[in-house]
Length: 171
Image 1 (spheres, rainbow, N blue to C red):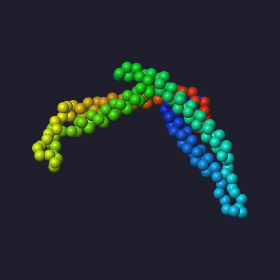
Image 2: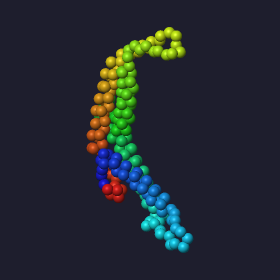
Image 3: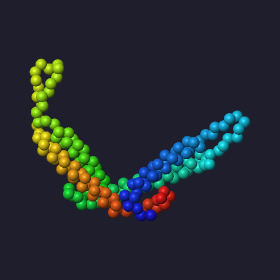
Image 4: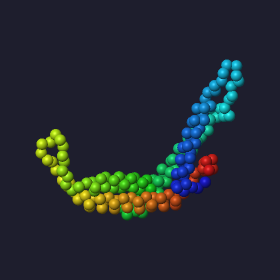
């Protein structure tokens, strides 16, 4: 079954949940408690059966993870800074957002601050070696660029298709 990256991502989350559910179900099937003289009630599925099911879901999960990573690496699209793979674009968007956050922090500072401490006898000043207004403006531009890049990535996620035959088990 062919699915877009945008469809594979929530499917991967569903599979991860199913892995956790199988782990929990197997934990519950591992033991049976009963009082002396009572007949124990066995779980619907055996420990071994649940282990096999868990193994299968984990194999499928590794496959979908690989297919997504491969598509993110192999698929190239044009961007302002040149051609980027989806994986590179994701990392660039993270870096742009991180830098925007840092620059915003500098941008809200005063150009000159008086530092007052009780243990100091003289007044100390802290002078910024940058223009806070310009940094704040630069941060906003980086944030906008990161948003445009995120939208371009999202567009690619809806265009790139991957063949994942095992999808029928989870849809």
